[in-house]
Length: 289
Image 1 (cartoon, rainbow, N blue to C red):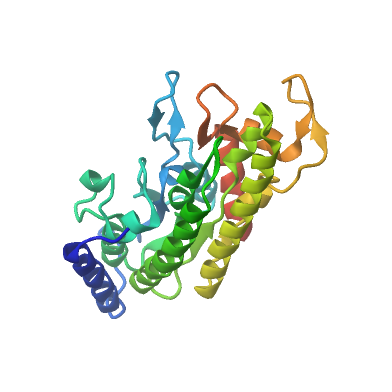
Image 2 (tube, rainbow, N blue to C red):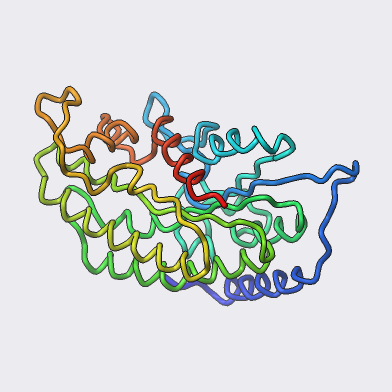
């Protein structure tokens, strides 16, 4: 997917603005006490989306960014949280160039543009940036009907092209010393095991492993530590078998998906439970400089 000239122009302006920011002095709080910010960026996971009792998705205050923020406030009581993630479908292309499904919440219409503006305005006062993006590039490529190889290839291509530009703009706007942390992903399609689609569960794991490898290589190139969410969810662990009360023992990784997401509920929702978001937050804490 490629967008028009206006969106490409916006991207150029974002990068130019970030370059200007390199020479900008640090800003101090008006009351003499320096404000500190944690900026959370990305897809619906970054804003803690969960389904309600009717299965409708809503952003919540239970997400990994919220839990990470509370943990950081113990030693940084002046820290404030700014969540700019999109609660609907945000791909790497949407985040970089638009059009975003959340464009109404961004006064510059694009998440990255608002993020860069925020970093410039608060230069010297940002303690941490986290980002998770890419899940919505790859998620439409699979389902109980199987995996679409052409879709997977396109998703890999899109993320390979877009994520480096996103990280470059964030680094230029934030400056060289602000920690930027990324994350890889768990595999919600492991839940296919519960309906007898064991081969699909295994195949989806191979795709997710390759996708996480791609994310890791891009993040490493930009010296961005990666929260290993896949490992925290025991994504590759088809053994041991554990009892989760569904009649037959299931592999550990399937049990984790059932406990840490809503995939094993009637909603079959990919988003994390409170416990799942807590695990993701800990994965970020584990790689925080």
